[in-house]
Image (tube, rainbow, N blue to C red; front, side, top):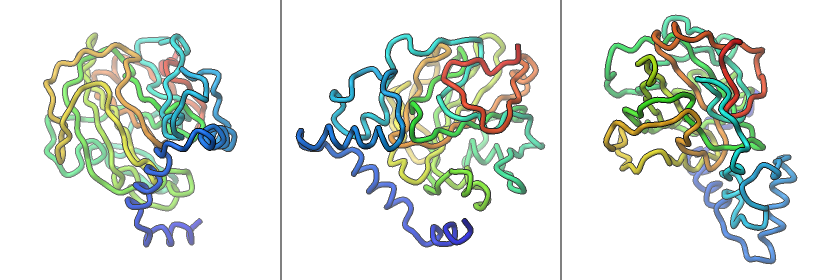
Amino acid sequence: MGFIVFIFQFLPRRIISSLMGKFFALRWPDFLRGTMCRLFVHLNHIDMREAEHEIDAYQSIEAIFSRRLKQGARAIASEVCAPVDGFLSCSEAPTGILGFQAKGYYYSLRELIYGEGEIEFNFEPAWYMNFYLAPHNYHRVHCPLQGELQALRWIHGDKWPVQQGFRNAVTRLYVRNERKVFRIQHTATGGQLFVVMVAALGVGNMVVTAVQQYEGTHRSKFEPGVQLAAGAELGYFTLGSTVILVFDKVLANAYNFITPPQGMPIKMGTSVLKQ
């Protein structure tokens, strides 16, 4: 794995990601489209039974990847729920402001949220969760709780892969990569939650659907105050990656979050609270 990481240092990762995005967004001629889409579904073991449409309705591989689910395919099980389908690899209190990446590797949760930008208030992270989305997963991101969207930040960055082998070898991986950060104030407690979409190699774009926004260098410009229900759609990946939730002390004190075994599979809408 070390040799692969060494080679990746010299690859134009953003260019590769852009080219991959363009390839997956191609609209193939009708006589090829069905074959290409079915091959992609087969190779990635995607369960299309939950998809909003039949496979022949999708015009590109990207459209399948960013598919919506059928109405009612997911239920919201509690006040705080999983934002995505994927694998919950970490759910714990941080060490100071540091989150765990892999054995021996940590990263700053403040840097994850703000990059080199200004810190809006005296935020102290008190709990965080890391969700890894595999290629077969449903790739839309949802709001974990009821609240008000108060800020949306776009932080430019790299496109390192985020699979376990790279997490074990690349320092500060999550804060190196491009990300979109939603700051949501919880309706019931007033606590602050950050939902961080982290890009990766092959993630040509992360699309925000919760608001109509203009994306600037560090922050998306929109009128704060968008009301979100638990389970409301925030956006989607055009190829897969990682979502990290960061809770403040108010939320960490109000709820008893689960601490699952590493790599526990989870579905969007599943409760992340201990019973």
